[in-house]
Length: 135
Image (cartoon, rainbow, N blue to C red; front, top):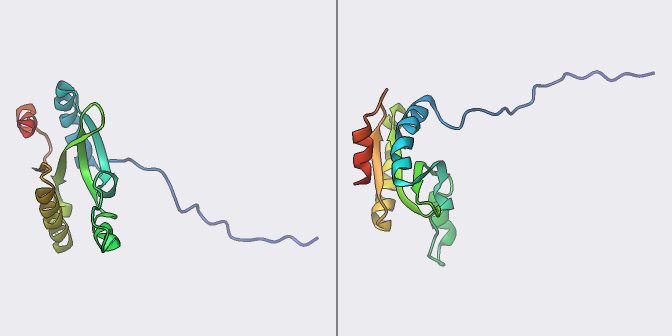
């Protein structure tokens, strides 16, 4: 009888937390404010999931610019209609690549006339400061 031995390799995937530690801290502070207004927080939503490309010509050129990007927090009304995007700017936003990506998002949201709020990552947040994002 021939027995075939092979090395058992570790499975290359595992589940993990959806939010980083700094995102989780912000989410915990954002939630009571959103609850007050009846808003729903959708974390890490792909831009392609709530922004559509309207150009038929060069569709894939424009789609490729948003297809691999996400927003940290998309704030929606009770019907899941997006009303605001929030980017949490932490240390990961200091690289040149991140700066370029941030500039693109700023340009995109401005041209969509869609509110984008940038929040500097912190260890804690004051309720009033987060509430001010919605006024």
